[in-house]
Image 1 (cartoon, rainbow, N blue to C red):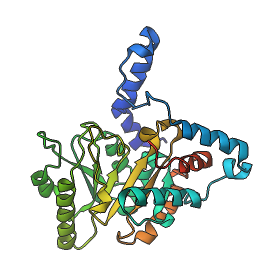
Image 2: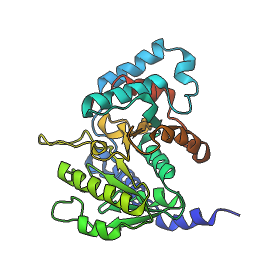
Image 3: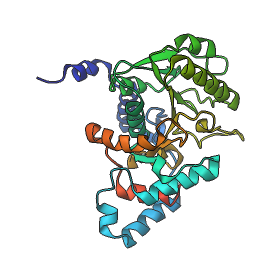
Image 4: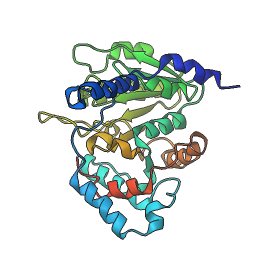
Amino acid sequence: MINEAYKAMLGGKSVIRELSEYATARGAEIGYENVFDYSLGNPSVPCPQDYTDAVIDLYKTAEPVALHGYSPSLGIPSVRKAIADSLNRRFGMDYTADYIFPTTGATGALAHALRVVTKPGDEVITFAPYFPEYQPYVNGTGAHLTVVPADTENFQINFEAFERALNPETAAVLINTPNNPSGAVYSAETLTRLAEMLTAKQAEYGHDIFLISDEPYREIVFDGGEQPYPSKFYDNTLSCYSYSKSLSLPGERIGYMAVNPRATDAELIVPMCGQISRGTGHNCPSSTAQLAVAKVVDET
């Protein structure tokens, strides 16, 4: 017998994927250059030349087993260190390689983050408007997603509605800044207030509430704007990142989860993610992609 839960999901397919398929079909009719495709976010600009050069150099010089062999289950140590060092330089953090977990894009990072801090029956809160795939990501863990209505004036957090939504079953809060689809960037004031509220509720409920920060658009901020780094504001933060947008590399499926070293049980979270991978099949990204991005971690 087939799995009835996944069969039921066929009635609610990904709108984003359906739009992408339509855009492809329409492009075949009138030329893809005449289609404004805002579905998947495939790049319209090439990846950095330094990334291309790094891949070519790796294929010419790297040992075959390093390039084509299985990655260590927690990621290549030198790559994890390069990512940690980059985050420390740019955001004043104190990561080491032990707190970095390379993943198959931000999706892989979110899949692990949700599983490592929730259990079936827990609640995860997010804020409208939100990336539609958060719903199946959360449902797949056995937790349930609660959506806080948007503050439609500026698309910062609607704190009155958020406070009403918080309850003892809340295990995690999922944010996306810069936000898809609104484009809003959470301000330092917003992140400070969010951290204060979560800290107070942790004390009230007697358990941790983790902040899962989905950040694939982190470097794409215009007009001199700044993107405050959420993990600087709240210790129990798991930062989920993808190079798909910043380096125009969605097909490489390369990203990571960064665990705030001051989070509760921080030293256990990455090893636990290694165990989660055994059950989800979200194993480490390709060795080639890991090694190549390590050479361009500060580029956009």
